[in-house]
Image (cartoon, rainbow, N blue to C red; front, side, top):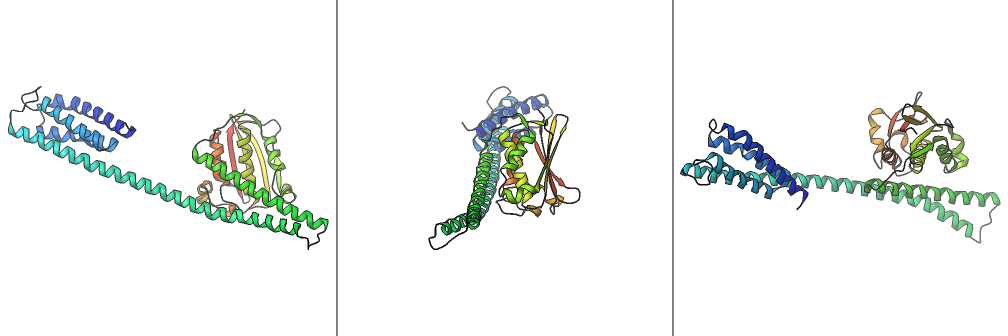
Length: 341
């Protein structure tokens, strides 16, 4: 039996029991027509909760309760009056009509919800294909051109030229690696299979790991300033926290000349702050920063726009929060709060 049908049966039973408990003491003060109308409420609730069949069952049960408790002779299933028999028959027909109508409404709402989900999936699929087709082709084209040039017997390269071509291959490969890692991370978040293993983690070690593996280090490492106390420990998953900080730093480097990574303890929490001096993002648009495939304001560099969606998902998996704000003097500041070790 489906969970929806079970839910409908529970609602029907509870609704009929409640209606009976309320109406039976008022038997001498209410007309049979009023009682039958009130007994339609559990039928409608069962239809909304579980669909047609629980509602039809509730209608039959309500009709039997009406006959047994409210139609003379009381406490029997016989009917002395033809008018009362007609009332019971009409009740069953009306209750069945209500059940069918509520079931149709429920199905229509479910269909609308599925249509919206499919539309969102289609939008994400289109955005993914468009972004991936661009962001994969660009580094692949660079790798292909550099490799073809190095293998060409008709071209003579100096050591500097050869080093530059190899650096192009390495940089393009780093871009592809970051792209694939973000796609895999997003798929883990969407599938709900992400798990965190929190342990005492030194924030300065995490920052050192991120800076050490910055893409194109000759042009980016000097743009990142790290000022973290050596004894600042977070209760976090080291791998997830490294990915969070790496995405935040990469996101800022794509938009600003300088990035600062700082941190501080705040009671039972630890704040990890990544601030840049770029153009910033208007307050009204900051919530959309965390949606996949969004590139807003100074976040408009290369990439799929997955970084901040992954940052939020990974941070929440560790029991933390991430909050955007304006950098004093201009720019965007991202503050990650996680439990303190």
